[in-house]
Image (cartoon, rainbow, N blue to C red; front, top):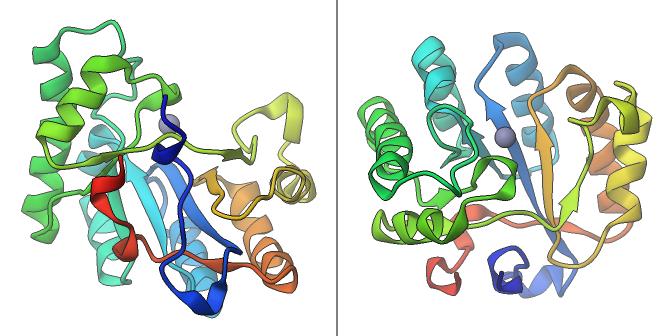
Length: 209
Ligand SMILES: [Zn+2]
């Protein structure tokens, strides 16, 4: 896999090399949690990509609209959150296409970013994402917020994991989870204290994948 798919050069010279991309996967799930995360992002003037699953969007279309209305970017994370790399092309096309169609129907915008569940899209995942005009990306900094053995639902451990793997251009993987919501304000403050800015997904060159 090319490193270009998950490391980014910040466009804003003000931030020099010290900028990170914030991403939140597997939503939209729950209004209070999501609203809190959106409020925290606003507080820090930060933009993020919310990689959504189609079945969740179907359950919570108003939350999908909320992410868009609050000025954040929506990415495609497949319909069912399944491992795509051994699926047929037709199946992958449906997993991605149905999400993009629904997001477009609800927001008027088609996702420009795709992240495969488990980071395993395979060649067919890359191909279909490209055909749909999406930049395929995994991540370079896993918060481990999804790993209950590693983080034990402890916001402090989520912060620690991210800071330990921090590097300029980091693509930080987080999820819409209660302990991540709790960690977010403090995490963003610590990143700012270390001189990091937040990459606006709208500034990412879609051709770099
Ligand atoms: Zn996921």
